[in-house]
View 1: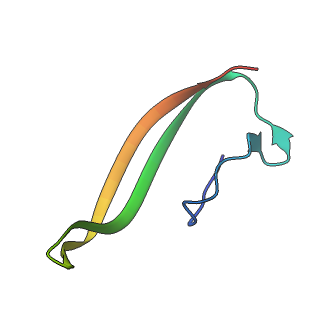
View 2: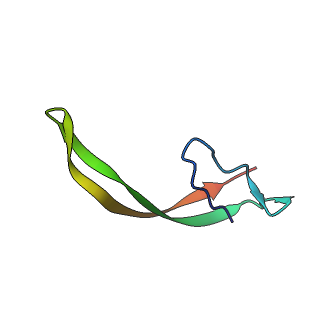
Amino acid sequence: VYKSNDPSKGWDGKIGRNVAASGTYYYVIEATGTDRYTEGRYKDRNIIYNIKGHINLFK
């Protein structure tokens, strides 16, 4: 349904060119980043986060 490498952009509610139908949509997010910024530097780098869940879309 949606894929992005830019976290500032969100889903526009469309699947392809069509507005998504009401229903339950499941998501999987895989993000790579840094964590634990302390004492002026990052302690951990290139951590992979995997997040799964769902949203209910109502119109």
